[in-house]
Length: 417
Image 1 (cartoon, rainbow, N blue to C red):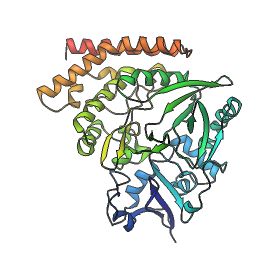
Image 2: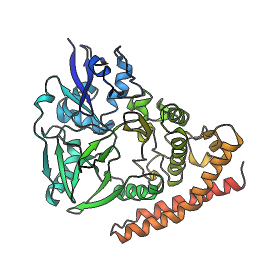
Image 3: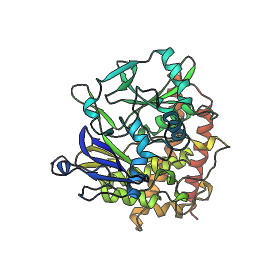
Image 4: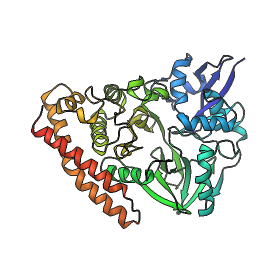
């Protein structure tokens, strides 16, 4: 006998996710939803249709809403659910997912409790940061039904008038990330890279401390504030979900998205493909120059600002992995057939562009412009963060990597091989 979850998008019932007796998943849109003018797909990989979608497609999209790897194992253990049971996990924590999708057992959403806010003063926040290592997403405490994808520990919070809250039944506004265990100054590393990316993306981040425990606070790009001051959900999906690739294959060498697939996806679905293709190209260059080897398919997303609009989401999860010698240098996606950054030459970069002289010249201009300006921008970012009383020795290490990579790119442009 199958089990069912009701699936909602922007608060509207869109269909059912079912789990058969042997664990296989299927999804079908509700006829009444398909008949509305407001109907929009959950995913590029789940277009509007009357026929159900099979297990392979469902696993890629729905598992992609859950935490990855170690975090998923801990969440599953705390909930008493198998880590491979995506249906069971979404049943427990699918009340507030990335984007605008929600999951509720049949007949339960109508019984949803009154929205609540739980204030977090410094003492409570410090305890939460400590507890997250043991209980990711606070799964199992019975108060929060929250799911966030990714391998890093995090929690969603609501910020209002500089006060922080855990929220249940209302959209959250920010993502809070504690430090990554055994990774030097991870919150300051990501803060620096996000601030540096502000010329190319729109996310704002800051760092705080609770009882001397540092955390990163990042504005959610999948939320907006309406004219009444209320936080509204925006739908989104990562590139793995859109390409029907399961999250455990997010790296190219494991069968994950290639840069060619990413650029093709933008070409096919973006409302402004020329704008987003250039932005994606800049994102690839930026990740290379800051030494981020972890820019995999789940770290790029599509954003749905309206029913008819699709655009490239702001860049997120930006971190200089190259400052940590214990982390591999192999890039998550090849550039021109090369995984190792030191092997990437101008001819490899050219493979990111269309096979025309004009397209290659435009890419070369972007490379030169970013390699010329980024070191100065990095120094400015460091100065700004120091003035905000957010010092860290990691900044100088990142700046040295940026200078080295930028110099290499500029030399490569001057003397192409």
